[in-house]
View 1: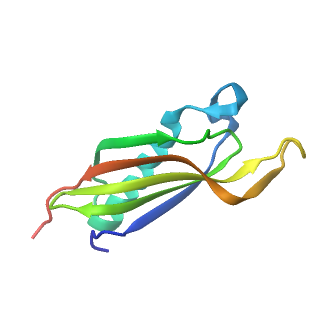
View 2: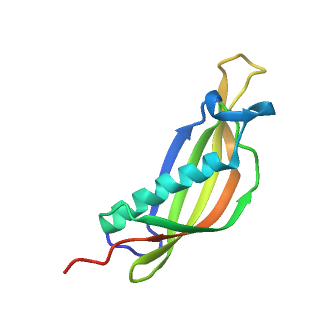
Length: 130
């Protein structure tokens, strides 16, 4: 698939309680940034056949907490294509959350996903081979 605006890749990840570092089972903000790196890498593989290099993040906004027991969906969408760079729009949404009030292992899909983190990123890929 050639690199073009609108190409999108989505990953889902269960957030382990072992990933929680703070009171209330909160994860560090860096947890989602790691997921953004993974989905950005797949965009580069899909569009350019190379893992590429995540060169920068911009406008990172932590909008809602991510907790152990959450199911997070992370999407990267190509928003600009340059000769060797691609700009990405990134979004992490919580699509399910644990429900300890019901039982220790209960969880429920959310009616509306919670947007937890948004950002923009630039990735760089090697020059196209003739």
